[in-house]
Image (cartoon, rainbow, N blue to C red; front, side):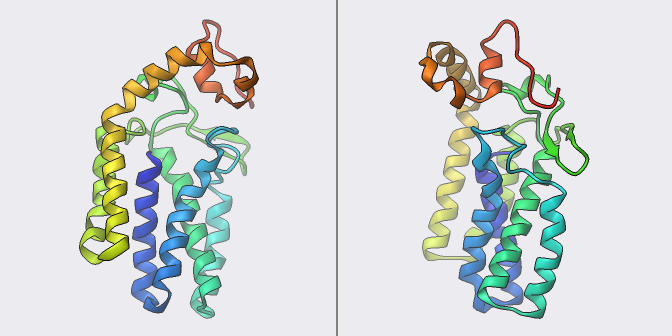
Length: 212
């Protein structure tokens, strides 16, 4: 799913936390968005493996939520919402497409790496790929209530994220085609920074990925 979809889900999480402890609404909002986007920081370094932990984030989130309920404070609420967001992100990616430049082709059976079991979890493809029409529908479903609940800076942020989501969804396949054309011409010094799936798309003999 799109990073923006994850960010909007973070606002949903924060809204739930704020409903229970409204005094911590600001910190919950920041933690929710940051935690829900955090796993995608591995985009160019072992994407969906380096910072995606579908089991461990969830296991850590449970006691963190319990701690926040028992000892509500800015730090405990932030930790609980952050971990819940990161866990949700890692699990939500399983329902999307595989790890490939053009996931609408449904050729990859790697959605998220499960470090606990030491294997890749196959994609469910309920949302066929990041930026698919159904991904945008999910983003709108997460963001629309926030537009009604919040005002000011938060409302503006949500509207901007939804606009970015719509723009990305419209350009998604064009961006993949552009990357496919540009990657073969990238300087050799950048090769280590180019994700494997980008290089495979332009390589007639695709390379194996870690874990094969």
